[in-house]
Amino acid sequence: MATSILMPKLGLTMTEGTVESWYKKEGDVVKKGDIICTISSEKLTHDVEAPADGILLKIIVEEMGDIPCKEPIGYIGESGEKVVDASAPAKETTPTEDQVQQEAQVVAPPTSRDKEVERIFITPIARKIAAEQGIDYSDITGTGGNGRITRRDVENFVPPIKAASATVTGTNAGEGLSGMRKVIAKRMHNSLQQTAQVTLHRKANVSPLMTFRADMKAKLGERLSGGQLSINTLLVRAVVLALKDFPEMNASYANGEHAVHEDIHIGVAVAVDEGLIVPVVKDATNKTLTKLAENITNITDGARSNTLSGDLLTGSTFTISNLGYAGIEYFTPILNTPEIGILGVGAIDCKLVFSDNKEIVEQHEIPLSLTFDHQVVDGAPAAEFLQRICYYLENPYLLLF
Image (cartoon, rainbow, N blue to C red; front, side, top):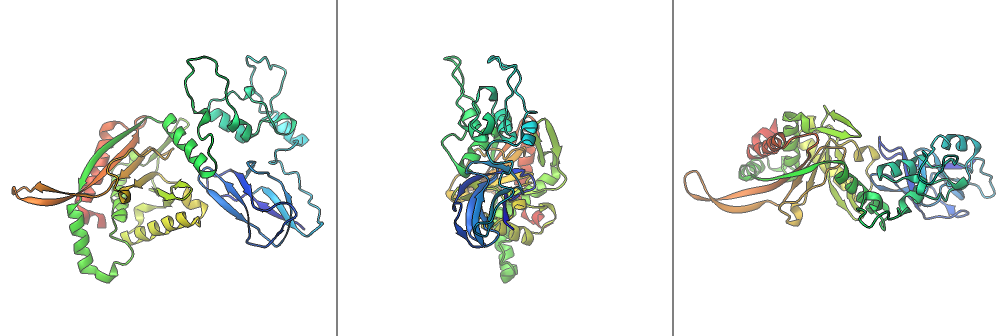
């Protein structure tokens, strides 16, 4: 009996995926574990391995086709074996009678094109994208079976210019891009379109933090071997403590729903060859510095090697993006929606200042940039939250408790 190749579920929020490209064609011999295709979700791209030895009998979902998670995208079996389920509902071919009845429920309202008596068939994902981008899908000519409008039709649609003064909208976000880069472009554009983003900048005096690190290393020596005192680990800990003090910043807002979260899950932005992904330190509230360091190392290494499980790529409640390694001072991080806050971290700088005793001393400072959604949080509490992060960094022994 033929073995199904299923669309994987890469995270709790993933409901469907897109087949980006096939590396094998029908009739090819494959071995279990061979990379046979690449799929993409809202968060990342992912290689799909052959689940068994055999012949790639049938490709159900062609490239750029969409399908729900856990549904077959192809079949592997013995040469000459017949595939019974070769007409999976996700393939952009002529729909079955049941599909027609289901798709008929998605009907466009009457428009200026006078389509009162014409039913418009459109896939659910295509309808969703059209709604997000403000596209009247009655203007789109479908290329799927029975004239059905597909995701590709929506993404390739160029709306007619109705007036010389027409403004640019988000309908072309990501046009000309592919894979993860296209997903990132759309997410960034949507983030800016759907939120009222404001960024606050300030520096924290981390001279006490640097002294604390040196003192702890001198006293604990080899016991500190897991990055417990790295700047990234201490920053995550300071943010976690500040979020406990200001729970309104540990929240999300999307589609008219505002939720303040009890658990704190910190997203850590990581640059990879294909773009940017945000793996997550789960339940960061209850982790020691040692455990935080271990988790941060595991998720960043996993992100760069593309070996993270899907559940570690979703569910963050606040994100940190650190560009200090590149010598950047201040920048304007874009919200990782539906989160309402993200902290940008720049490079530590050393300068000479006057001490309280009027003596010239060295002072280490770290620039911080807090972007927040002004729809949900006002400037004053956001500034107090940023001040609280600085407070913990400037009083580093508090990070131990």
